[in-house]
Length: 314
Ligand SMILES: Cc1cc2nc3c(=O)[nH]c(=O)nc-3n(C[C@H](O)[C@H](O)[C@H](O)COP(=O)(O)OP(=O)(O)OC[C@H]3O[C@@H](n4cnc5c(N)ncnc54)[C@H](O)[C@@H]3O)c2cc1C
Image (cartoon, rainbow, N blue to C red; front, side, top):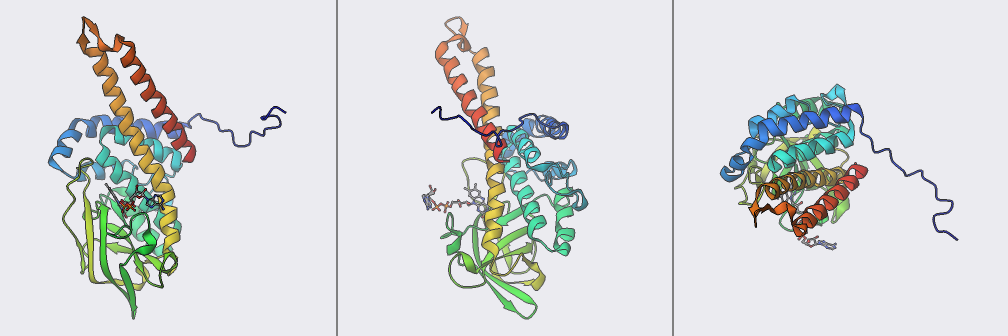
């Protein structure tokens, strides 16, 4: 029997973009080419965090693309978020990682936060009042395996007291608010809770930034918590149910980081094509050599495939 006989196409997709998605993508492309691409190299070399540009992105609606309008977002969906991150990454990879994490944090607060938490933090994130928001899950001994984290939160009256250290937290020193995961119960993934911790809270100190090989305009820092007292209502979601919050966040976060990678790859491909057309050897542009054409065609195939898969996931 022909194996595709009787195949149902309920999973087939309409690949055309909506007018709104095109509008957001084009706006992000325009911003990236005008405000980011011309300075991205210097920002990277000088490890300069693009605070001003990130706030401008907030004002344009790029920090809450998939956030309901009532909390200050653009309410344009996750495909629009992915398209916008691709464009920003083509101009500046560091700005894109910050944008990706910040959108993710806003989405997590919208999904798990109380009404008060949503009203307090999400408009500040979406508007650019905060240049960014951060996600504090990883620790020295807890990377792929967050269930082994050691940072602790202990309830004391109407407060939580945080102690421990987070590691590799993207722009954790710049964020207005950080989601911090800590152990509140027994071992493993069942004893973890999430908290909203504001920058400047006593007992919360960002450490020395990592010296990275790329994304150097995005800081990656440890976060130290020493008897850091936060109010009881800083708990995000239910007590001991923080692992679910982290996993949900990472579902979206992976689409964000994939979008970032595609934006970087697209920009690199574009530069490569331009260079191949310009560079002359043996009295011809090197783009006329079939070996070079094959490399560029293979790149284009891989990037387009990754783009389709990422937008399908979004
Ligand atoms: C630039 C940068 C920014 C970051 N930003 C943040 C941030 O904002 N917030 C945050 O919380 N964290 C952040 N991180 C940390 C990041 O999430 C961790 O690096 C990641 O979770 C992997 O952890 P690890 O580096 O400890 O690798 P490990 O967990 O030690 O893994 C090492 C290797 O083992 C493999 N491996 C692990 N477990 C398995 C398994 N079960 N099966 C098969 N293979 C496995 C991994 O795939 C990997 O190849 C950032 C890291 C970097 C580099």
